[in-house]
Length: 464
Ligand SMILES: *[C@@H]1O[C@H](CO)[C@@H](O)[C@H](O)[C@H]1NC(C)=O
Ligand SMILES: *[C@@H]1O[C@H](CO)[C@@H](O)[C@H](O)[C@H]1NC(C)=O
Ligand SMILES: *[C@@H]1O[C@H](CO)[C@@H](O)[C@H](O)[C@H]1NC(C)=O
Ligand SMILES: *[C@@H]1O[C@H](CO)[C@@H](O)[C@H](O)[C@H]1NC(C)=O
Ligand SMILES: *[C@@H]1O[C@H](CO)[C@@H](O)[C@H](O)[C@H]1NC(C)=O
Ligand SMILES: *[C@@H]1O[C@H](CO)[C@@H](O)[C@H](O)[C@H]1NC(C)=O
Image (tube, rainbow, N blue to C red; front, top):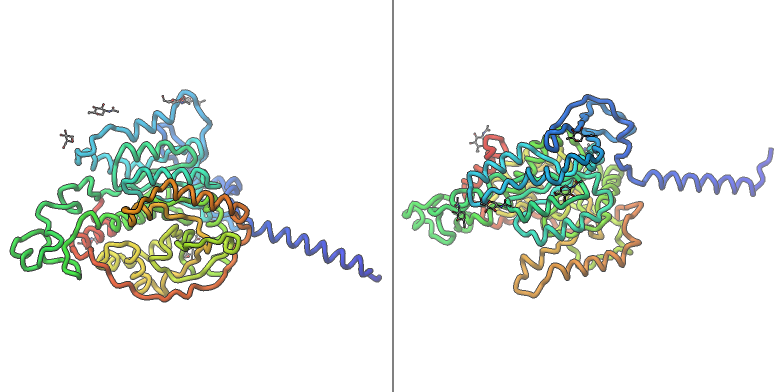
């Protein structure tokens, strides 16, 4: 039998086309919709939503074809006689006066223990190895938090993620912003050693703390607190600069090891700060990056969704990814990693707690250079999916800089580049050639009380 040339070509063409389609299907990321095929595991129950039980399933087994699930909570159909808006309000608006520090301490301990999730009845929650938990660390800038939350509302697939907001200030204004979230499950956690609670004692500022610029001999003579331990530049502790580093590491510990819902969670956690603006394809891009990491960089520990480049070219870089070692000034925006990476960071917690720098990111770079085996390697999007809106508020206060106009610029740029978002294939475009070094500590973290507090909550010997 003789195959005509034409017929042969046609078969070749059809095969190529089918192959192309299959490949495309393959690179489309797997949303964890496949949950339904992975049911019937052990069943537990969790009290949520004003005493009515939400059904919870914890998985015990693993099936190779579908993503491994650690948790499945099904949404509940709306029930007109139970009003969840009202229930949420009752839970989070106990009308405590925030200057009553005992009441505040008690309330925060209650919230951290209860671990209530808003909107669970509406969206349910299904968490597995391919899910994303999004964490926002926020201080007291509700105007920025609102910008971030408004951008998050537009993010594709946000309803499938769990959002965790980590606070170090309790305020009804912030709580109201969280309660207004109606697009995904959300949980609030509160840093229990905040200066709001400890306003007149360590870790807040104590009346007898040594002044920043006191000379050591004067300090010793005056017997002020911690006279023995100025930082490496001879300055004494300033409470207001120490909180963010404590909050950063406490939050990771609490999320990876303290939350019941995430007890068996092996998927990724993305870290955000309250003054970011997100591109609507950030979750989609994270899934694409995760796939690329599996194929091209299994030794990478992190995915990074944002960068600070002044010129963002989506047409050229929208689907490009760079491989690099972690550098604080470049890779601290939208860091995404899982529990195994947290445990590696935690192994270095003594270093973290004692490195004389009040910045968590410089400290982490030091860990990467000096403690974590083989350094932290990562993949970072070359076209940023995160914009740092708060930059103008923090460092260039004198300039007339309005966050809303920054947001308008960012939105305009993203709209112009719409067709370059949602890349259906991301690729490695090379390695960063940025020079690595162990950062010189900036000081501000010489006080042994900070070192001990940090070690105490990390080793579990102090919880409040
Ligand atoms: C609606 O909620 C009320 C109170 O929580 C409960 O008694 C009732 O059975 C629920 N109805 C349905 C249809 O689920
Ligand atoms: C729940 O209560 C709030 C406040 O009373 C009200 O605005 C809202 O319409 C109620 N929702 C339902 C579904 O009854
Ligand atoms: C909260 O309590 C204060 C005093 O205890 C009272 O004046 C205020 O009206 C209360 N606010 C609300 C919203 O209940
Ligand atoms: C809280 O502050 C208010 C007004 O500033 C004051 O009247 C009240 O006494 C304070 N309460 C406590 C417990 O300090
Ligand atoms: C967690 O991250 C580590 C380091 O990147 C990786 O080796 C491991 O496979 C990841 N675990 C899961 C469940 O994806
Ligand atoms: C935890 O760390 C503190 C501070 O270094 C130390 O005093 C304490 O003994 C440690 N506790 C445990 C249980 O390891």
